[in-house]
Length: 311
Image (cartoon, rainbow, N blue to C red; front, side, top):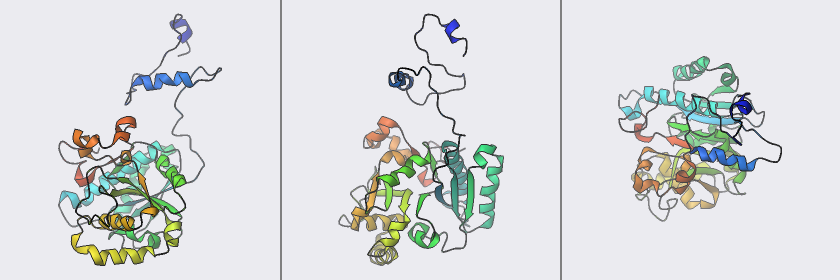
């Protein structure tokens, strides 16, 4: 690169790339950054993700549970493989320290997740830590509903299913905590599909939201006047007979009743395989404009032919 002035005596600007670089966005988007240079700047490059920022540690809660079922949707091996890929993506993209709060009903699962990081480059291992949440409180039964008991010392947490893979640094999602108003204490991506089997008068909007990737301000949850767990218990008792998605239904009904406490994320934070069909993707203009920020392999779509593929 030092010989560019000799190699290109007639050129006023050039975009240099190694042979192993692949664009995922139009290269003209990068070229347009020339117009953002000040009067002294003459070169630009991406900051290294290995350069660790010393700002706030990210706390990511992930659930991987052992099941005796051989069905793909319930497979422990599937969950474990997904969790390894999910953690790897989060750490690779982030410049923050990440503490994974692992909820599992198996010590072997926890140990295997920790062991998987031993093959990572040193720079990534050093910014990763683990906390075993096993055995604290109903670890694999609707754990999202009992975060206040699981995490009594934490003020905020990012929850993700084991089949969520970040495509953008997770701190970009974490920073959305700063956009909450004085009442909001949870955030999730709205559905593109629709959530019509729950009663319209109680569900959160016609489309509802997917709970596979969520932000929780636990301090505000503890201060919720009506009582978080009391409301969860009441909703379960009243609507149990119509539940199809368990705790996700409970969360949608809760925030349908208490809408002012919910922050809706854009659908680009929860891309699912069927969104790629033209009749669905048009409902998510944010994703068409800026691309997906997190991929969610619901219904084992990372493992089924013709869907996403985790590797």
